Image (cartoon, rainbow, N blue to C red; front, side, top):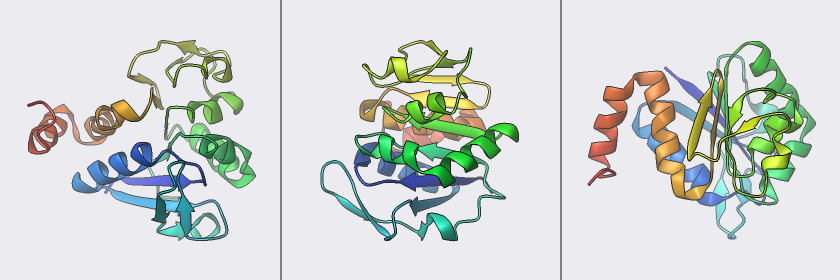
Amino acid sequence: MTKIIVPLANGFEEMEAIVPVDIWRRAGFEVITLSITNELIVTGTHQISVLADALFEETNFDNADMIFLPGGMPGAKNLNAHKGLRKKILEFSKADKILSAICAAPMVLGHNNLLDGKRATCFPGFEAELYNANVTNTSVETDGNIVTAKGAGVAMQFALAIVARFKGKTYANELSNQLQIND
């Protein structure tokens, strides 16, 4: 079973976190939301509080297939400042596991020098944070083990691109149709 880790920091963009988590759980993935704070309750940028599944320190990343970084401010900056998370991201990169980020959160990948020469996208205004990336400004961009997306408005498209990556395009299209996305 595909396992995805979703770190949450105070100030995360709610749609960018919850929409993908919902779609991936519908697809049968094991999705673990984890708080990088000292409490399980994490508050988003629009003051919506979410109960994370676990705390960062309690989470085993060993058998995870992907780390997904939701954007939002100051959520993305808070993710970027977490040394333990940055270490896990570098470990995933070395193991060629998938790293994904949306909106402002691709900056975390940029600050870890993981976008050098890779195609990536982000929320307009954060391009300079994607150090040495080939910024495409597309809605969703995939380059090797890196998947990035522009923002909240493409959260479903992004989540389905991840579903297609793990379960194939046919399954992703079927799920999209069940959700009435293409009507």
